[in-house]
Image (tube, rainbow, N blue to C red; front, side, top):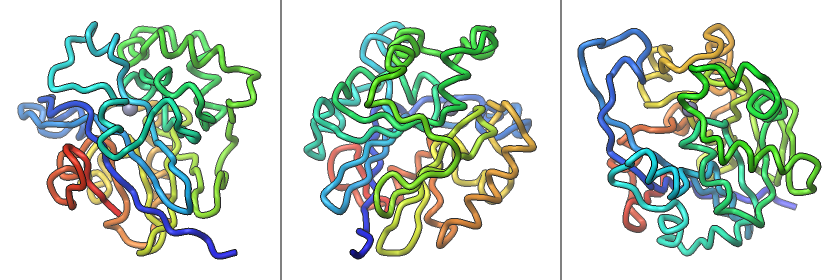
Length: 257
Ligand SMILES: [Zn+2]
């Protein structure tokens, strides 16, 4: 059977937010600011819908006084996706802006790297200050409760989860971040999530300031660059260009591949 081709959509649920430029561009531009958006990615094709990341839950958005925010569930409705019925949920990594909304997807199979799960759920180091800054406790407790359930898929390394959809272990930003390689009409595209916060990192080799292992991060860059069919099919996690430079298909939703 032929491998399906998929389309990839960026769904903005928050932003733009102003940040110090050195946060997304490690040790560069210390006196400048930049802007980021918060996104969910959607992969569609072969009769399947795969959602990559959960966004921020409305409760946490209130606690954090998140401006320019809509519930990820409302954002997904704009392309006719009912979060409550989503079947496949890929969690790239367990930072709050990627995991917090996990309870909005109660029926979904959850795909997460085992290393990532074990760190955030079991390792006491994850309770230390720098990690707590990027943690949503409520979501992490919910994630912990999925242990042993059939819906939780703990992935070890690279794994094809559907024809034309492969998860890639690409650590550095977190201990077990995963990217998603997708078969598209133009070849293999990669949803990199926070492997790069913005497009320039893939050219300059300078990642964001949120690092667990810089050496491993460089190897993850090499890995995705070898795998992707064309450099312009390698996508970052927070770049405003994902909204600005691609065809708009609904409010705050673009088709990127
Ligand atoms: Zn992150």
